[in-house]
Amino acid sequence: MTTPHPSPRTFSTTQLVLLAVVAAGFLVAPQLIVKAPNEPTMGMVQRIFYFHVPCAWQTMIGAFLAGGASAMYLFRGSQRARQVAIAAAELAVLFGLCVLLTGPLWARKAWGVWWQWDVRLTTTALLWIIFVAALFAERYGGPGGPRLSAGLMVFGAADVPMIYISVSLWRTIHPKTSVVPTLDPAMRIALWTSVLTFTLLFVVLMSLRMRLLRQRDQLAELKMRAEDAGLFDD
Amino acid sequence: MQNLRSKSRWSRGLLLLALVSAPAFADEGPSPGALQKRIETPPPATATQPAVVAPAPAANPAPGQPDKDGFVQENRPMMGPTVDESIPAGPLLATAYGFVWLAVLGYVVMIGRGLRRVDSELSELDQKLSKLVSKS
Image 1 (cartoon, each protein chain N blue to C red):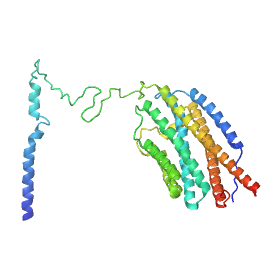
Image 2 (cartoon, rainbow over the protein chains, first blue to last red; image 1 turned 90 degrees about the vertical axis):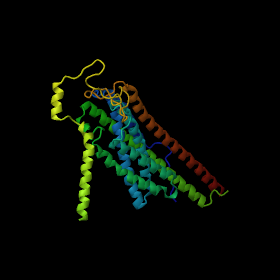
Image 3 (cartoon, rainbow over the protein chains, first blue to last red; image 1 turned 120 degrees about the vertical axis):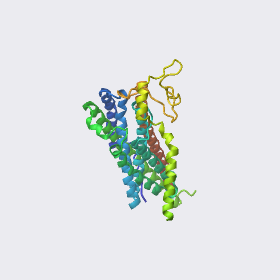
Image 4 (cartoon, chains in turn green, red; image 1 turned 90 degrees about the horizontal axis):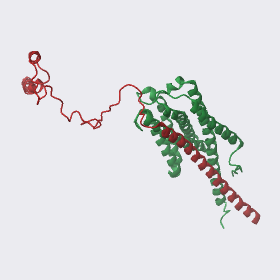
């Protein structure tokens, strides 16, 4: 019988340290973003970029992790891999939502429209829908739900390289990835600080979500064994 | 033989079609002679009838109105910044940053509540087990 060892504290020491670094990052990043020069063509609205791009990268990291872990779960049946897949998929959905909302806010000003059925935008929306579907399958899919969800996540992860290279392969109106090395040094510092902060935030959220999933699984197993042993019959 | 007869019927049909449709293409452009004549004779400019006939109003809709294909002509210059200056950037920027903060905060709160619920369920289970142990 697996005995759970729940920590009495909500956060572990490592998580607390990481949270402190993330908080510091979120204090410093806005200052760097304010200090960064205005982009001459787009003006102030270009500053959405400093949150939009890091969110997009976290979405891709989450989708890749979820896809890889799902493949491990499908082939080896590892429960830990399933937990990693669920946590990463949730983060892909969370950051994907941020990408899909901040992008149109920028586009309304830069392009004059909220949305275009551009290849990059469409494939990103598709990725988000696939992962939402996977999470629904996991939660409401019944006994076969986890396997169906894992299959969807592998399928969704295959969309990630497509999103990345879409701006190079097809003629799109979305800015290309090659724009990052050409940025002004002050803009680059603001962007990389944001990227680092969001990556650390991803790690913290991932570890917290993993812990919650692990504890829930342990609790469910414990309850089931206690009932099987007839401990709570009266 | 049958084949030859069919071919000649086809060629006669094509010739007839060409003759019938010829007037339809006759207005595509004037012959060189007619063009010369048009240059030499001045156009009959009268007060009631303009010399150059303007296109029908349906072909050139009023500004801001969609044409027959549903396209609205835009009067913005082709060159220069593409940014629509009429939309203020501040609220868009604030909404974008605010949404990211709210989404992350909401997720952290959700995880925190989940962790607290699991902790309370575990302690409840622990209490039940302790009672059972003490009874036995």
